[in-house]
Amino acid sequence: MSTPTRFPFLPRPAGSGSLDLAPLLPACLSRNGVDVDLVGLVDSGSSFSILPFDIGARFGLPWNSLPHALTLGGIGRGIPAKMIALHMTFGPIGPVSQLFAWANSNDLPIVFGQATFFMNFDVFFFRAQSYFEIQPATAATP
Image (cartoon, rainbow, N blue to C red; front, side):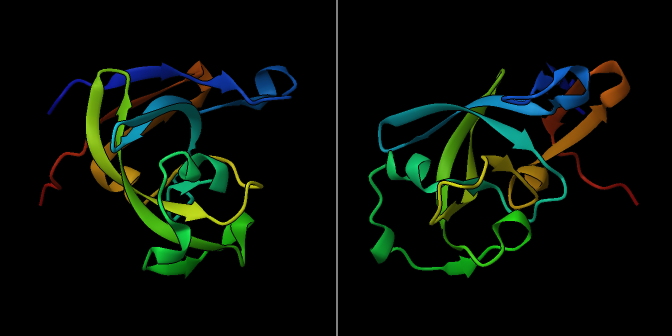
């Protein structure tokens, strides 16, 4: 088992103090020589990792030519999305390949969700202490 990397809970944009601290993860996404630094919400309740349209467009991908269309649920209910693979680096971890639902909307936050963030990493939340830890996923034990 590897040693987890610790990250502080950070204030949400336009938040109101300690009640609005969240597991926001600074990361760099890259593809074909394009790097995008961003901050996303680590959200175990989200089925997919999500990118707003303007962030995904920075990678120069042709939206209309991409296969694998899906429709988002939750806060993105009804918004069309396309699956894209990007390399992700955060803290000392990476680059690792991650799938994102590239939403056809800029009204959604950047989210690191079940597919594929939580499939590749074990995440431990310590909200009372205002930090969370991430490590590469370990094999399940019987």
